[in-house]
Image (cartoon, rainbow over all chains, first blue to last red; front, side, top):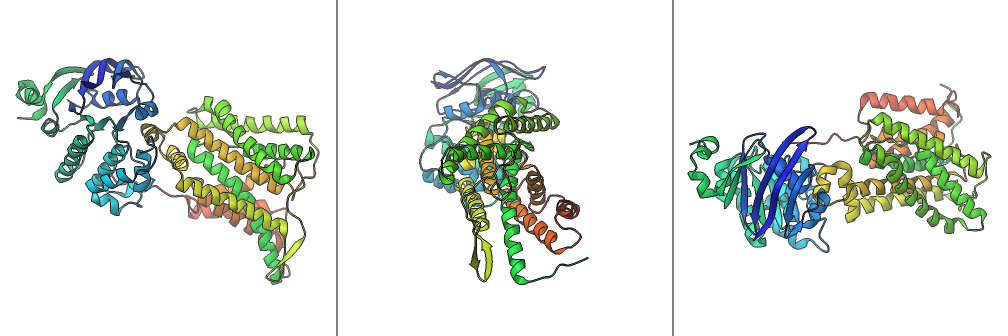
Length: 233
Length: 300
């Protein structure tokens, strides 16, 4: 059963069309990757889903039509870690986590304990301004902030960007564990196709705003042109 | 420089008067900063909004209500009015060039000023405050109850606001919407409403400042105009972006100009404002961000 379905979604920035009718599905509890070169429309696909760019076409989320405003998609159960991470750099780590749980009612102790378990170094920096964290810690905070909402679907934009391999490993391991604990679905955009295919069950390849290849990770790794263009061997 | 005769008792009284002045500037400066932080708009109508609500208080008291009965009613009206102004007047020009928005707030100031003249007339009116003007003895210095009351109410309000912003979920959402509207939407915050709430809170601060100062001066449609200038100066002194800065800037400014006006002969009461602005100019040359203007630290 799929939790998210895009049917012919189009999006534009002013006169420039960035998505030319993208269709894709994400299954319940599935991790799906979106691959492609710069400007292929990967980021725009995520933004069209969360509502941070105007779009046309149908998006069905958990069996219902998805609203178009970002605050409404957040309330519907979608957490988006955008390009640039979307943390509140002027606020403390703790306030960032509180904000992540904004749509939740009641106490959030369980959630904060959980993210501190995954990323112990954040706990020591609870009261530090988020903007002063290292790049890796900021990415951990971005993921933690999203997890505080206990989303049904997580949209992740380039989580590995600019980070050391060891940090990337920590983040993806935490992501996998959080995903299986919550039964959450994940749609991740990555430049690093090898990394993405290692964790994703399926993937889509975008070129200039269109889906050109789709399949399981194994199928994509076996695909000659995907291998040459995106995997580099 | 011609220094006036000096006694410690008088100095303490002047200090108290300065803090009272400063408390009023601080409240209004805080209102300016709250709106500036969330919408990047300098609200030139802040003074007129405050005076308007003070007139409402005057009318209520004229109909037999006591000050403390009228007080919460006026605050509620101010809050609703602030929210309504944001929704109706400011919202349509959201995202327009700064000059457009500035002109809109100036227009709003003129409109409110005219409305006040139409409704209440332009004459000075006596506004009976809640505090007596008699003095009590504080550590050997006679200080008026009114001054103490004004400072207590202003400081109390600022303290309550600080607690609200720091510890409540709504306060946190207001801060988040001000510093990062994009990310705020992604966590489910209705940013448009947060901006409107900010205007409501600013209007409440203005209303309190108006009702506190009206018994000291006289109530007329232009009552807040000079005070608003001082409040702007206080906000800039504190760093425009910093709520704490606005409060500290307000008190500092009030104390400085009161003492300058009293003790530096040639300044007197006529040159107080230019003297204060000179000081701020010099300070800004040294610290362009103001006293508390913070340059956000960011690592990538």
